[in-house]
Length: 353
Ligand SMILES: [Zn+2]
View 1 (tube, rainbow, N blue to C red):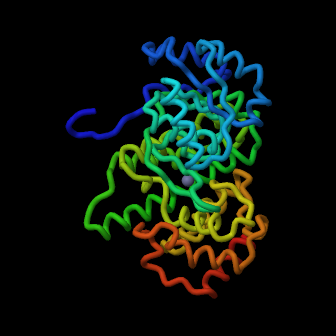
View 2 (cartoon, rainbow, N blue to C red):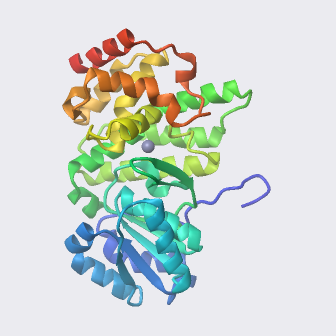
View 3 (spheres, protein in one colour):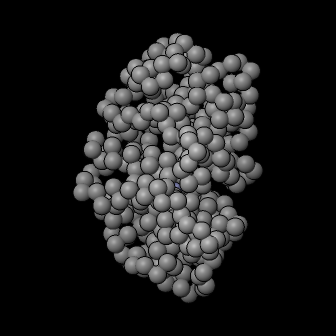
């Protein structure tokens, strides 16, 4: 950190085959001072059962680290874990899991001032390296809370390759959604009479480009997993540098938040929700949505809202309520007059593409 910057970057990013088994060596090379410090591994039941042997080994490598099974990915759980970390003097937190686990572990580590190491088992969204945690608050509501980016990120490409395809598709969706998020960020900056942060913009844009224009669309291949891991991490770093989620989140995210909050029966992941939102946002932004739809389809992402149980009513309602989910966040929606017949037409275009 110097006089021009006020952000932190992770000390280590390793994306390798079977990296999990070498986590201790990788971490020791970058953070030798943490050797021998009291460590906890936070995960969830399903993963603790699935990766029982590997986690036991990891625990041994970190001096008999406790393996902790977390409950809900909500604010109360994160705070209660943080309390335990403080009271029992844990200094190192290893988050092992997907978005739910990583957001909870990251926030608990942040509150307790522990060093946070991120071991993702899926690449479902860009929160793995972001300075934010999205946690449940009350009912179906969730809140994006500021915290600190991980000190180290270790991605095991073998493990990611074994994760359900839907998780990787979600990560692709979250990356491609930057297409409209970055555009909205420029609109917001213009509205405020300021500029976007050029470096944060460029980093997020590079992450987007690497997936949008990727020749290798085989999502199980090691090279693709490496590209997607880096793209998601770049999204996190862009948010850290910008000091906000703006480089990765615009009106397409507001659409997804409205679906989560008001239509919880619609079953779709964060990344797919924002990817579908990106199609509408692209149209509102006056841009051609067809290249975007075609890239999503090439990756095998179903862009028909009806496939996820989203009716025309739900689709229109989510767009009409989108801007209320994050008051004060300027996007294309503030300059767009949405009406039902236009939203119905967009829905039809997505169904028929
Ligand atoms: Zn996102």
